[in-house]
Amino acid sequence: MKRYNIAVVGATGAVGTEMLKVLEEYNLPIDNLKVIASPRSKGKEITFKDQKYTIETIEKGTFEDVDIALFSIGSSNSLKYVPQAVYEGALVIDNSNAYRMDDDVPLIVPEINPEFIKEHNGIIANPNCSTIQMVMALNPIRKKHVINKIIVSTYQAVSGTGQKAVNELRKQSQDYLNNDEVKTEVYPNQIAFNAIPLIDKVNDNGYTEEELKLNRETQKIFNNKEIKVTATAVRIPVFYGHSESIHLEFDIPVDLEEISYLLSNDDNIKLIDNPAENEYPTPLMSEETDQILVGRLRQDLNNEKALEMWVVGNNIRKGAALNAVQIADYVIKNNVIDGGQ
Ligand SMILES: NC(=O)c1ccc[n+]([C@@H]2O[C@H](COP(=O)([O-])OP(=O)(O)OC[C@H]3O[C@@H](n4cnc5c(N)ncnc54)[C@H](OP(=O)(O)O)[C@@H]3O)[C@@H](O)[C@H]2O)c1
Image: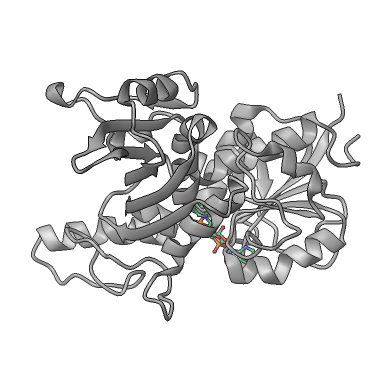
C-alpha cells in the first residue's frame, strides 16, 4: 500500500492537537509526518504514535515533500500560506473560512458530498463547525423531503475559538467564584457565567459572519441554493460541544414518526429523545462520541409543516479535526492525488 507524507499545520492548536489524535485513530498510511506551528512553538516536541516530533515553522520549500497538508491556523494565515503549499505540490485540506466559498474549492462533509472532492484544484475546504453538525443532522431528512427553510440558534462552546478561549473561560470562572477581578482578553465581554450573542464580525445587514456561514455553507454542501437559512449564533460558557436549536419548514405536513425513523437509521446520528425521563443531548455527552446527537423532536405548535429539534455535536472532532482527516482518508482510499510511495 502507498504511504503518504502528511503535514499538520497548526499542530499545537485546539484543532491541530485533536487532528493528531484522530490521525492516530484512523491509522492513515503515513510515511513522513511534519508538525508545523508558529515561530512561538518552533523546536518544541510533540509525541505521535510513541515517537517524538519537533515542531517546525513554515519556510520556503516546507511543502515540497508533502502530499497532504492539514491546515488549522486561521483565515489570515491560511490566505498567506496555503498558496505556497499548493505551489509546492501539497493537497491542502483547510479548516479556515478563507477558501470555503471559492467556486473552485470543494466544501466537503464526506458523508454528504464526497463526489465533489475530485474537483479540487489543490485545496479542499472543511466547513465551519456549526454548519457540519447541522447538515449532518439534516442529511437523512433532506434526502426524503424538501426543506424550504431553516431557522437555527446556536449555543457554541469556547473551544470553537481556540485554545486561548478555553483557558480564558477556566481562568474567568475561577476568578469570578473567588471574587477576584475578571479580565477579558479573547472575548470582548466576560464569557464565564454569561452568553455572548455575537460570534465573528458583524456585517452591514446585522448578521454576523458566523451566522452567514450557516446559510451559504449549507447551500453549498447540499448543492441547493433554494434552501434558506437564518441563524443567531451565541457563545456560551461551555468548554466543548456546540448545541443548536433548529426549526425546519417543509412543503408538506410533518410526520414525526417518520422523521424519528430517518434519524435513528443513520449511523452518524444518535437520537436521544425521551424528555419525560430527562433524556436529551447535552454538550458534555458530545465529548464521548463522534455521532451527532439529536433530541427534543416536536412538531411546531402553529405550523403542521414545521418541526423543532435540538442538535449537539463535538465541535473539535466532527466539527473540525475528524472531518478533515475523513477527507484525507477519502483522498487516499480513492487515489484522488498522485504522490505517495
Ligand atoms: N476550534 C474549532 O472548533 C474549530 C472548528 C472549525 C474550524 N476551526 C478553524 O481551525 C483553525 C484553527 O483553530 P484552533 O481552534 O485550533 O485555533 P488555536 O487553538 O488558536 O490554534 C492555532 C494554531 O495555529 C498556529 N499558528 C498561528 N500562527 C501561525 C503561523 N504563522 N504559522 C504556522 N502556524 C501558526 C498556532 O501555533 P502556536 O501554538 O505556535 O501559536 C496553533 O497551532 C481556525 O481557522 C479555525 O477557524 C476551528
